[in-house]
Amino acid sequence: MRVLVTGGHGYLGNAVCRALGDTGHHVTMLSRRSGIDVRDRVGVAGAVEAAQPEAVCHLAALTRPRDSFADPLSYFDVNVGGTLNLLLALDRPVPFVLASSSIVYGGQHTGALTEDLPVNPESPYAASKVAAEQLVAAHAATGAVGGVVLRCFNIAGAAGGVGDTDTTRIIPNVFRAITGQLPHVTLNGDGSATRDFVHVEDVAQAVVNAIERATPGEAETYNIASGVGTSMAGIVAAAEAVTGKKVEIKRLSPKPEPPHLVADIARARAELGWEPHRSTPDRIVTDAWAAWAAA
Image 1 (cartoon, rainbow, N blue to C red):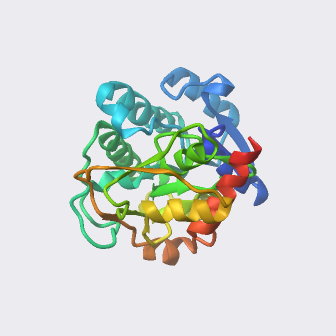
Image 2: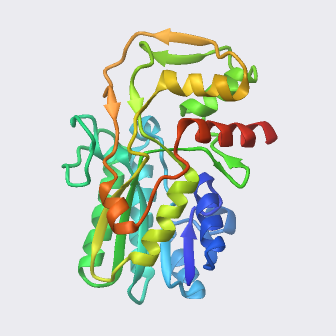
């Protein structure tokens, strides 16, 4: 199958393109590195016409919640406008997979998060992802695409030696502290807040499964996560065990944040035939550290 991947040169995009190639799909990347910006409607239309994709995987996005407060219009321009440009460029019904985020749930829910819970965007970034999801659903309702929204939780680990270098996330900062680039890692309170970490290769496999199961005229949403919570302190402990090095910690006053954000992944298991086989803290940190050390 010919698959057009936006954001294919990024951290997640690298893993997705590798997984698609490994399963026999022919991948065409659309990214700023290839000279196309998703905000450029004419450029996107030309790229889609040239590629003649049989499926689209839309990963390109701005993804930093805090930054979105300073520049909300850019987040809507890229995340919503870019999604719309892709949808409008398609001239036949194809699978359309959108990488969304668990951030759309906000912090108002308790217990495992299911896809049927109401969304509660608490930042311009979150609102832009909700809007992009709704665009895909609306377009699918016309029969123009088979829409699949993947709400990814905390993506981590590495694929093909490419790991996460985003310094707004805990694992890269733990490694920076270990290698002397930071004096310490900061944790809010006692570090007991739990998040759901999912290996980037597991996310990539979910994308492959979604492409192969999408149905024109329908739109489905799936949580892509491990289904298990890991505390921030637990991530630090895993890094110490994997690297054999002590991580210096600076504890800040507790912040008003959700104590637990963990996904229910029953729907993805049942309908996508998907399992997060690699998403244990040890495997995630081991793969991430190998990529970090080799970079």
